Length: 146
Image 1 (cartoon, helix red, strand yellow):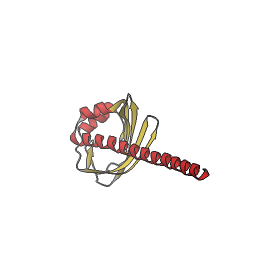
Image 2 (cartoon, one colour; image 1 turned 30 degrees about the vertical axis):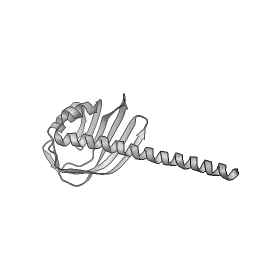
Image 3 (cartoon, one colour; image 1 turned 60 degrees about the vertical axis):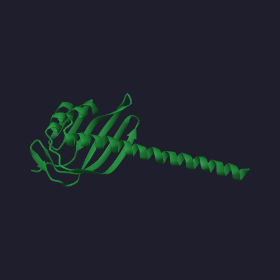
Image 4 (cartoon, helix red, strand yellow; image 1 turned 90 degrees about the vertical axis):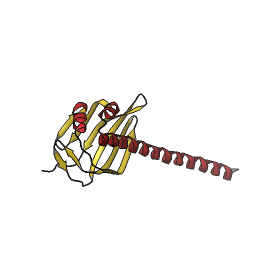
């Protein structure tokens, strides 16, 4: 009887561990999906879709300064993105907040300044509101060419 209890408890503990691993993977996949959708829309110049995806409180930071939602959408509307590659995702959650850090390899032009294609870190933050994920913050950590 004792052995049966130990086996039963072990099975329960393993089930809980596997459930936590599965949840972590789904969190990572959710973060990747949100970031990938934003990049697809940026490449396609789909400002309307991005506008719907972004929180009214959206802020970004780039080498040349901070932008609010309206300013970021104006910047995105002028982007000329080449092919890109998203790698090295790290995703974390805290309640209704999702943080995704990743690297981007892309040739892009921001405010008339072309950046090189060296992989550069980015951070995108999303907040869950009414069962929808809204993009609330973005950091582009790639230096502008001098």
